[in-house]
Length: 201
Ligand SMILES: [Zn+2]
Image (cartoon, helix red, strand yellow):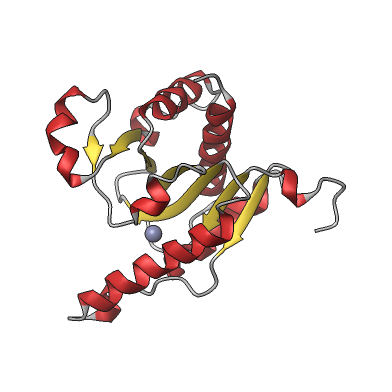
């Protein structure tokens, strides 16, 4: 880094490549985001395909947990917001899921995206928002303003009191690193989440 802005001033972390095959997309999104605002945390040795652990689910879970705990150690005192970028496949069109345990932040994200120039909620680019909860809090699902989901990501990360965790999964129409329009869409969502995080509670 050689800019005049100290990296210690950057309070948003964007982690790319937790799943190894998704790193190509993450790098493309990172490349079009403003460097001055976002600390890119690139995982070079991310998780291989779950299928490659064929019959050894325990090892996958252990590796998954370890990679997130290492990430937590790396970022915990440096950022206020951690965006965890992933990709999935949706053959019928580009769309995205956003996961966060803070329903107030989810509300601000929804509002910010609604006010954005890009219509993130139109049919082809639908964004769905989910509230992460523990399995034991399942009974509260009905009272939440967002659908509730559970995650195997350690609570140390998604429930951190040192930063807000936001998972972002972009669904591409095909395997691979995606196209320019996918990267712009992903970057737009990242910027929307950052803007929402800066907003009033
Ligand atoms: Zn992933």
